[in-house]
Length: 484
Image 1 (cartoon, helix red, strand yellow):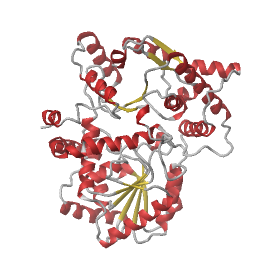
Image 2 (spheres, one colour; image 1 turned 90 degrees about the vertical axis):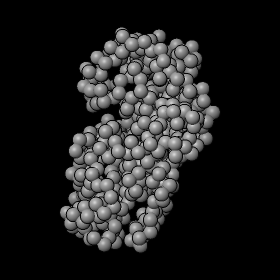
Image 3 (cartoon, rainbow, N blue to C red; image 1 turned 45 degrees about the vertical axis):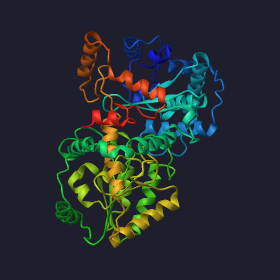
Image 4 (cartoon, rainbow, N blue to C red; image 1 turned 120 degrees about the vertical axis):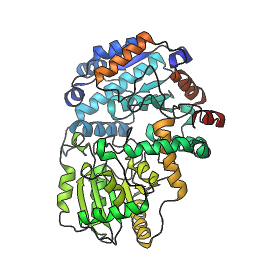
């Protein structure tokens, strides 16, 4: 789409290093990527990992002028993901990975210097193989478009002229999404309400993700009224031996090795956040505490960290640790008086249902105002203390506007920023063979005249908007025409 708008050639950067192929990309095939890229009209395909490996092998590592601290952070986050561990083990030799990072940065610097790209488009902004490209693009004032692997066609964008000085792509994006949401979604909330109601109904049955990575019957929320919730709450409290007179704080563990350090976070890593929160909870017997492991933790942590942490507090009468999939969405909703997370999607799902959430870090929606976001550690502990006191005293922690904002976010994420396209099959068109068959049919049989994606990309590019939108959210008449 951008090639049509700018007249630029399409250069595809691909490849994978041996560690990624061994751990996660066992079936990665550069030749297939090349063929797919050419089907989409690529002018050139470059295997950046082959070039980086050659530099490492030859001992030729040109300086990409990359900040040492940034490289070290990318190295550690990548190693945590590759090792499926919440932290790099003590004594682990970081040098090989750091060397590969320097080589990748040098290759990306060469690409920016030689090709002077109009934009960098990436499926990911984390780790060394993608994140270093994003960091260098930001330094070179190259727009970065981040395609989202959910829904139909979704993308975020960061344009040089709109940056305010946050050190990471995600940090900048958090602020810009907040501004865009307030100006174009919140201000049009009355016009969007019919769409919001439909999406909220879908989210109750999880007809679309994310819903804290649940599916099938586990994701269905059947409780409709506060009276139903209170009756179910008694059953759920008794199941865990919780005191009925104490509030329940639900702590949602994020995937422990996932994208560490890519946005603002209060703690050094997710494991430290869980450890210190559990220590705080142990000393707060005036509340019941429910620690929930991430539903897909097994692919993010092979160290057994959560189970080990649970063992340390096995005798605590007011603390419970369990896999989240052992708890139905009905129980989760009925029990939780306060949700606590770093950047998990519960931070927007629970407020939409009327349950307040405290975040110990930034997510893409942290600037939208419907969750409480701690600025630092002292602020985090104070917010926990104040929240428990407020719930105990019967003071509400969530305003009607915050609940409305969270409901609007559900629409914005699942619908408003999800562009249907004949060229990009919906990500749930599975299995993969089916998705490719659909794609082949569309490419061979369907003309792209009037393709919605063209107009959406052009609007985002020309206006320098941080999100790709299904239709023009700045135009009330357009909203009325589409949302009924």
